[in-house]
Length: 202
Image (cartoon, rainbow, N blue to C red; front, side, top):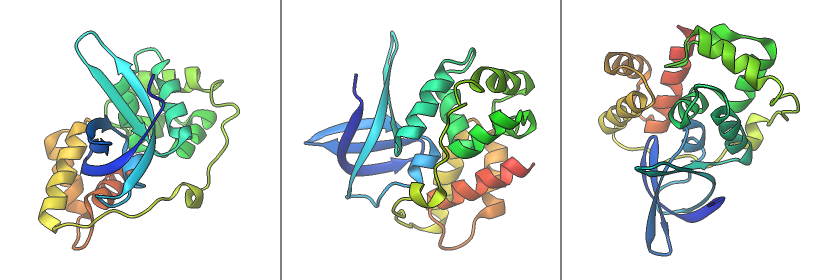
């Protein structure tokens, strides 16, 4: 089992990233909460990892914090929640907010995440409540990481739309949210963050 990986960040194409580890390129998938904390391209980064083995593929997931990986693994144990949905959940809501929703039984907030219906939200609350009973809240300041490189506005917006589609949003929804929050100077990660916030209010 690969538990942690350290290498030079070569590509950031949410939800996928590429690390150069001593000349070997490792492709990983990561939630947007991790992308917000990645350094600029060309710098070294260390990520906690979780390896998913299937008959036809191997998927490596990366997380900026051990708490994110812990929550990801707990989500995989919920009936009906696979790796893709777990990634969507982690991308659409901060770990602390998710824990707070579960403890408060706030299914309405969870159903705003793409692919999470009422039954799934209720199942998450029931099955995750005990697992998050001892969840330690991490302050936003402690979880913050280096900023990301800002690119051309058009390219950043297009990348943000593709990322939202990969996270389960319909193309029209993704475009609408990105257009609604995009403005000059925002990076792809910043646009996605604002778009996810906007979708959570609807």
